[in-house]
Length: 456
Image (cartoon, rainbow, N blue to C red):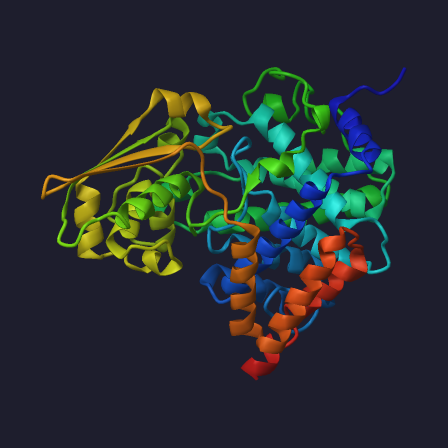
């Protein structure tokens, strides 16, 4: 009898998809550029240095973004994933409440570094990774689950492993086995927003490293349970979903999950994005001499219920501030900009004052529209009697131009202007959509060539 387990069906759908529209390929290039931008900018943050320390002294064929030298594949994947997540500005898929790019790209970079002769299309492999993570994540995650478990830690291993299997050209059985083994590594707790600790930064690192391990095991003949998703003790049952709410499929009706991914404008939690955006618009309408009397934000349940988003202080770490809708809006209003530097002002008196004048409530319309849309409504009343209202029906994604601008600025600062130009040329060359492992490995090499030499 034909194998009709969910994993097998998904693998067949993934392997059967060989053609993607231009907009999806372009989106994959933007997501790659966004990942590299975040990783370069975050290279000197504490969690980036801690993860890189694990790679030191363990040579290999792979690049750690922003560093000279070559490193062990698993160590490089771990370090790159942590760096990509380090600013909290990584790409976001709202339907699964997860950040798949910070797992997918480190896995693909390591595989390309070890296997530059592979001819499979890297961008198509990445699209498949976003697809399986998005589809399974939509079916698996609920607001209640997301309060306890980190969605990226649950779906990230699936995303990274399928992307890697597609690039490596694994056969159907190997791919099913790799995915089944990867499902066994799903994990990550959401206690960190309550304590202000650093656990979050390392979740994608674990997922990327585990994806590579699952792929290697499958290549060596290891078997995984093909019912690892829907079985009586499979992923859904283990996390309290006693049955599948529906049977997910990949690329239904030609829809692609990568097109639902957005690239953040603010270096902060997904749920703080549209609040910061309406706050920025409002700040630009403030009249000279106006002072804020009250701030009222309308949002949706998922935003207020996600750990850390409803926290109003005091703030001991930048991560607490980046998770907080209150802090993000208040800092944007106080400074008139959305910037990384906002999140260094943890004890700023003006920000604290504005937080104290803020209330946040749930709007039924916005609630109903989520997760397809992530809107926000803001009303500010001033001491002088003026009313300023701003609204977004959906979060605004950073444009491809902004993503590229941020990458090139970061590359220029850390790697030098010549490397900045080389990276820009390499990314422009990917516009033809034909990116094999050698081209990805060459781009990765550009991100690490000069960093160590300048430090020396």
